Length: 136
Image 1 (cartoon, rainbow, N blue to C red):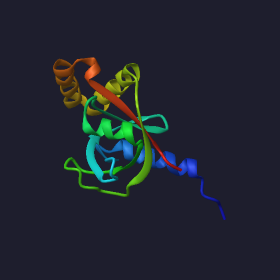
Image 2: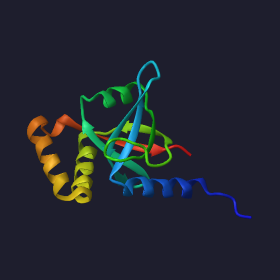
Image 3: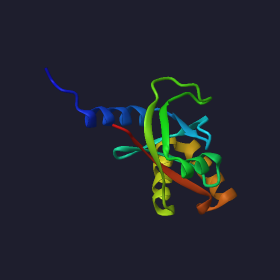
Image 4: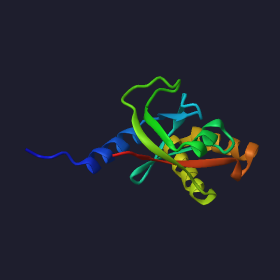
């Protein structure tokens, strides 16, 4: 009988979640109310990466409480699979730039146009990358 390998299971979940187009990220208000949001997702080694507007509510909620739930979803945010506990970390501008590159590669022309529009509206500092590490 083989024992389960938590690290291998976590990596398999990361690969699966990052291969989808959308990730449902559930953050929490100060009173504990969950707020689910569908976002684009990329793989960042043994973690997931998302990108968003720097002054968005989800960023404010992550600053207050870094634990999140993540799982696959459709474009409207309807869950399409299991949700997993994770920890979110806001990234520096340099690391956010790496996420922009990954998004361009994964989402093609739509990614290029979205990133260009964002840069024109907000500048480079108007967005932030968020690294999400799944719990064991």
